[in-house]
Length: 122
Image 1: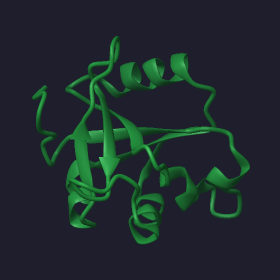
Image 2: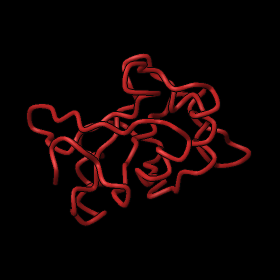
Image 3: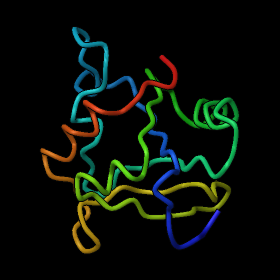
């Protein structure tokens, strides 16, 4: 796992917390609100780990409604910036920012992530 760059093929996993505005019941998928955060969209990089291990680690840290995943390359396609942001005890932690200098995603970027992410677990 590179510390300063996330490769295009790497998967990024997002914990979808059980907040009412984070989930669209009719579509059974996350809403764009799940990808709006003024501090950056917190994700876990796959870092070559098996998906079962990633899901288990996320489940141990949060109460979740679902866990979704998206390729880093898709973030770049919508002009969002996946950045390594390791924290103590979680070297795989990363964030998705709007640009290199602006943190919060645009409404369009958040909507694209919500519509195109893959549900890893419900």
